[in-house]
Image 1 (cartoon, rainbow, N blue to C red):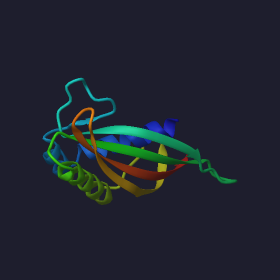
Image 2 (image 1 turned 60 degrees about the vertical axis):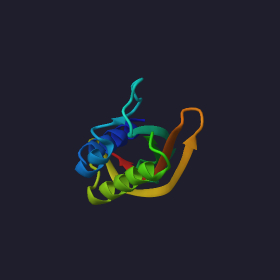
Image 3 (image 1 turned 60 degrees about the horizontal axis):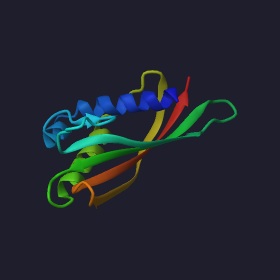
Image 4 (image 1 turned 120 degrees about the vertical axis):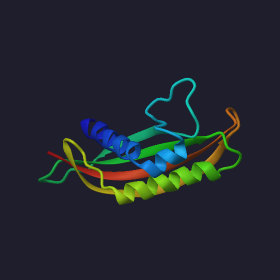
Length: 134
């Protein structure tokens, strides 16, 4: 699981260093677990799944990571704009992991919906990363 933590740390630092993204969020509103009174819009780290991707000679793993975007705006536009900014920023700035080698990072899917219970709009961006272990 060390590779998963390394990947999340790299994603967090890349997102927190993206001036265009922070402007849309109104600050560094990126959380692993949001505080009780989280500012909106914000990004949270959602589900992470890790699978063995080792070969006969190399240890590795495949990671499916979900980033969630939460918005109080009417409609999905704000959440989808933040997702677009996340994608643009991650395409422009390659991730550097501290203790592992990122082989590739791809965007798997985007979803947007409305949560009736909280009256929030949200979007989710699913990323796929392949990592070699040292």
